[in-house]
Length: 95
Image (cartoon, rainbow, N blue to C red; front, side, top):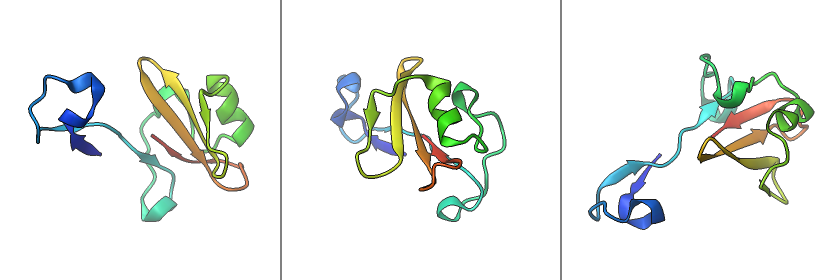
């Protein structure tokens, strides 16, 4: 995903209208109509991981969505989120 750089705190010196890369999404097979992302995922995550495995891989999340199965961590200076299928049986998306 690209966003206007001037709307981000860390990009104060970027001229208005300049697009910067703000998010990357990795999908499991069939999720939201996408093909599976096959190369290695960040933090050694694997789409086949159960909810417990995926959560344990990164420790205590800094954010948990109260409605959807989405969790977020600080990882290597950025935010890393895992979205699980509703049953928490596997990872649906890493962003």
